[in-house]
Length: 385
Image (cartoon, rainbow, N blue to C red; front, side, top):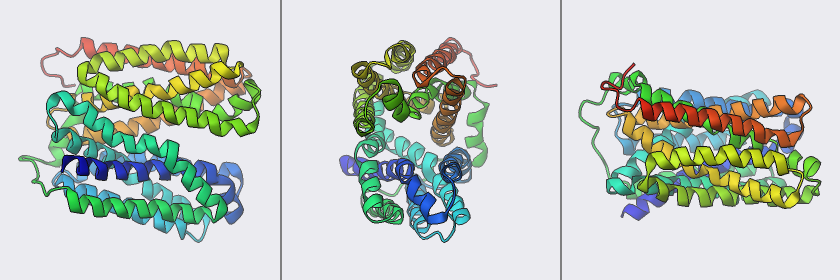
């Protein structure tokens, strides 16, 4: 039964990941449909990300007295409806608003799904259970997004969003069938969940996610232009390089979750240190096609720290796990925005696309310093601000 529950939870992650990233390949079609410019069309990506950042903590707090099963069903129901209605949006303004609404359940879903998965296994296997749920997201980057993009290109971008909505509906059915009814934990309340934000360790781990993993997005956001303009590869190779990143994410997720069950802090600190070195090497060798491919694959492997960060947040949040676990995905979306923004700054300053690796190295180093502070303060008696 546990494996069926994990498959159901991962199916939701697959749908969310597919919906989040497919739009990037379908923007030209959105531009044609609504008659807007490419930068204007890009606002729908920002709207979704903003929905994730805003929705995760608000939903986690407001839903404090709901059972986890009920909450997951509601979240995936909203996600499915948001994608179907996005496909039917009559104008660009409504489409943008619907993408924001569709992003609201994202972080809360992953946070609650991780808690459910971790609760079904012994403590020494929690990170692997979290990693299996996250596998839905990483597989989406490798399989779901290309399929949705292809469907959108041969039919319509609206068909792609209908497909994502269908995955959401399938997830609702699977969760309803296999996830047992549970009771709301004793003493659950909005006030108790908000207590997570009174814990310095929670803030430090969210900072690790928001800053430390910005480097991955700094590189990934501009990888297409790095491939063609810096490494001199043909445009046809962009898909191959993106696939290498996706494979790396899946390898990192599987290996990283196992590593985290052996050493949670060692995995987080070790991967951040690894990224400091790797991303510097990326910048120094981005002109070489072979080294570019190797570094992109290894950058994707940096996802190895994600199950560990999620699991540590559960630990440091004590009895306010839902808010902390959900907010982790808000932090990762902040990392996405921060990495892309800083990477754009160095490119605009004339340092070239390869310099995004140096941005990533600095962000990873800052994340490592924040994590070091977290470890040093861990024995603080109260653990509260």
